[in-house]
Length: 367
Image (cartoon, rainbow, N blue to C red; front, side, top):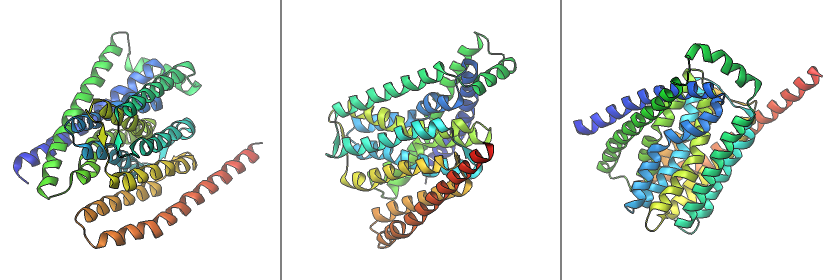
């Protein structure tokens, strides 16, 4: 690695950390001033903002005819968002999950993942597919914001009353917070681009394929804003933003990023059979697995977070070994398929059943 590549990696990471802290602080204050919950801000403003690097990288790659990077970036980012980012955030501190996110937004994320498989089944995400995806993204965003503004909860109203004197949000202050959010997003985009450039240069020097680069190096690099934002939000106690950011980013990546890339690309986004058969299916499985995890006590525990991280390490290791045609790759795949996945499914099912029984006992004792 030469010094320029190292400088891009370190400089990009520094900008990402600073931009993530800045974005969380500004977005949470702006949300409070309008009586909008941190969860909705995480699902919309923060999610779209931190997904801006994915949007830039995927659309530019699709326009240049690099479909593997464009599609791999979206799918790889969604896998990394849940397994790596949500996992690390939960290891830092157990994450509380709002019931609305578990019963409404998470099924939307699952539906978006399934829709990805359907539109990519023929080996290409065409322009009509892209228009449909973008239209669904606009509809989901408008619905989320209208629902939040229509019926704020008593807790949100109380938070607004308590926060106004502290933050001194006047008519002048709100525009300044909007400017602050935009500026923090610019910092995140610049930092992400530097990080991705350095990471891709390193990967290509090692002879890694473009699909693997898109699924791992580029996906991790463009997901660094989500990573930094979610971890910072967790440390600052804004855990609604941490979880909402991941779910919202995954929805936006499929509907907004992949949709825009398919619309802009002259011939749509080409999808490799390997990406459809393995990575897209894995994205669906992970999205579905989030539902019982979120509903289990409406909490993501440290153990569940650690399981997510271990799975991500195994996934990346498999991609690298398989890309290099290493003989250990099939053995790793079989170990995950026949041992790790069943054991994890039993753990999640057991946690969900115990959580439901605890809720039932609490209702009976309260009655």
